[in-house]
Amino acid sequence: MEDTRIALLAIVVEDPDVVDRLNDLLHQYGPYIIGRMGLPYPKRNVNLISVMLDAPGDVISALSGKVGRLEGVSAKVVYAKLGE
Image (cartoon, rainbow, N blue to C red; front, side, top):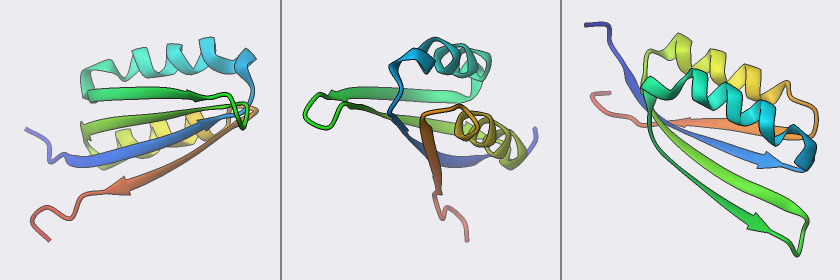
């Protein structure tokens, strides 16, 4: 089995028109997703999403890059320090 890492992908969605494309991307990476939580924040007109992953580092980077390239979306990854 390939080494995997635990990570949290934080996503801020400022453009509601991109949500369908974001959900399609997350669905493609579904086997690596442990869980996800999304909260609307109407006061600032954004949606905040956290996605927990257990995946190889290159898979996490690929997903984060694809999400971050969506117009109106910001994304950052935090990795767990397990075994370091």
